[in-house]
Amino acid sequence: MNVEHLKTDILILGTGGAGLFAALHAHKANPDLDITIVSKGLLGKCGCTRMVQGGYNVALNPGDSVERHFMDTIEGGKWLPHQALAWTLVSTAIERIHELENEIGCFFDRNADGTLHGKAFAGQTFDRTVHKGDLTGIEIINRLMEQVWARAAIRRLEEHRAVALIPATDGTLAGALLIDVRSGEFRFVSAQAVLLATGGGPTMYRYHTPSGDKSMDGLAMALRLGLPLRDMEMVQFHPTGLLAGPDTRMTGTVLEEGLRGSGGHLLDGAQRRFMGDYDPKLERATRDVVSRAIDAEMRAGRTTRNGGVYIKMSHLGPERVAKEFKGMVDRCRDCGFDLAGGLVEVVPTAHYFMGGVICEVNTATVQPGLFVAGEDASGMHGANRLGGNGVANSTVFGGIAGDVMPRWIATEKPGHRDPDPQVLGVELVRALHPFGQKSGDLNAVREKLLNVMWDDVGVVRDRAGLQRGLAGIDAIEAELLATGVADAGRHFNVTWHDWLNLRSLTEISRVIAHAALKRENSRGAHFRSDFPEPGDLATSWFTVARQTPGGIDIGLEPVVFTHVKPGETLLRDQAAAE
Ligand SMILES: Cc1cc2nc3c(=O)[nH]c(=O)nc-3n(C[C@H](O)[C@H](O)[C@H](O)COP(=O)(O)OP(=O)(O)OC[C@H]3O[C@@H](n4cnc5c(N)ncnc54)[C@H](O)[C@@H]3O)c2cc1C
Image 1 (cartoon, rainbow, N blue to C red):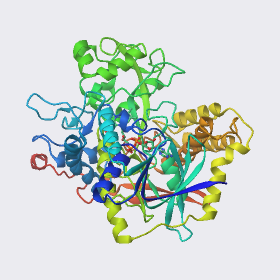
Image 2: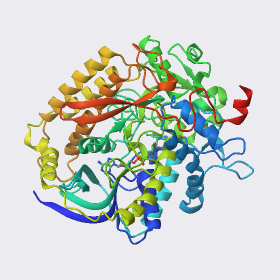
Image 3: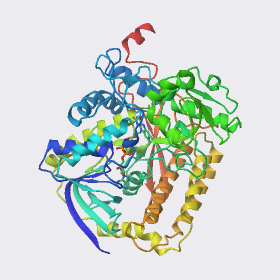
Image 4: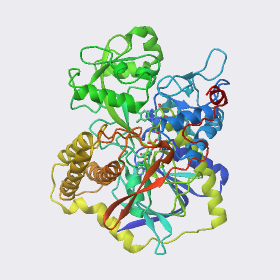
């Protein structure tokens, strides 16, 4: 098998907010280093950072504080976050937003006095979500893309898919195996340091929001390399995915949090406002609570024509809604709904993955030379990510990775290592597997996975369902392995890449189900109807998944409360009042 070998100093897998920030920071830290960014799609056009709608959480206003943002993050995460990571996220977001404005060139919406406008987002005690209308991600990713284009020294491998992280024979990291999607050829890139920033993406659920290029590849690669993964049961469901009817990929796409934050109402099929039955914060409760409430309405059969519930904005004034939520109004209109003046059908939709690779505050993993940032990393959000903390997370830690990797190379002097030929060979065979099989109906396999994950490993879980889900995933994997791709050509073979997507999704689905089975309590995004209580907060633990020869092992490790303990607060005024 012909494999072209390339060499770079820093290899960045993924070109979302995390990957691009890392590239810019690494280039600034040491312009002499050779940096290569790899993207499954086209630069600036793929991944979820471009899809960010609502905005970016940052404590800028004098009435707000880093401590308040931190407490919201910890309480939203149900005391499971790694507190040092969460603190780094909220404190560095301030520096990063100034950088986005003043160095990267983003324009965000402003108040009349010139300060940045912060919009309301559910689950937060302060309106701190900085935004550009309701299509913030396009502004961020376009400006980042231009900055990267302007630096010729940053090499771009677009439409290249990473399929494996490859060690050297001594166990150190040698680099990554890629497929050039256009030609179908394999490339091995040898690197001194590698950043995993492929952005997670729970696209294995019937309704989901992330971009189609995201299929948990990064986590599947990390798992195979032997890395521990944290909080894998924590899949965030956004309460308001558009329900545009069957057979359209618009179904599942998210209608942003600001709709509920600014006063939108949720109504059942009979147009009754129902959130009062579930939470005193009504529609402004956190995503997990609202998703479960909608799920309960759906299970009780109180649904709309297409099987969801309604969101209603018209009581806020159609003109105001059309002005403040132009992107959402346009999107709904494209699908035949009037968001500003009428009712829109919505359904919970898999949105974000809190689980991921375990890392330090400096983005280092247990594998020397491998760093992780963005949605592939874990710990910052615990059991629930606050809306607006996702893009802050990817830009904050992407930037940190870009600062750290050049320093790590300078001090550790790892050099370039040859890939272990045996591992490389196994990975090539694995990637080419479907060409050796009889072609079959890949879409039918995908539908089965979407349904099993939605029905048995979804918004509300229990032991029997999770065990059924695990059996279903095993059967789906067996069917996938027996299903080939019809076209034997490798160049731009999207069916082959669909097959590879499904392989990653199936593997990570299994880990999610195992971790969900292990967590016999309900925290944040993870709800077990057979264990509805959250468990003792003071002795909170998180799950750690590892691949072993026998399958997936789920361990439990205690949460260390480095900054604040359950029952305490960092907010002085609140502490004094209590
Ligand atoms: C519709 C939507 C709206 C959102 N709105 C908000 C919001 O308002 N506020 C907020 O904070 N967060 C929001 N989020 C979440 C936010 O988008 C993510 O948290 C964040 O953008 C993730 O950044 P990232 O860099 O980790 O990944 P991404 O931006 O998703 O980038 C991942 C990159 O990895 C590449 N990739 C994937 N697999 C491979 C592979 N095998 N090989 C090579 N490259 C690969 C992709 O092509 C892409 O370039 C939203 C998400 C969605 C889907």
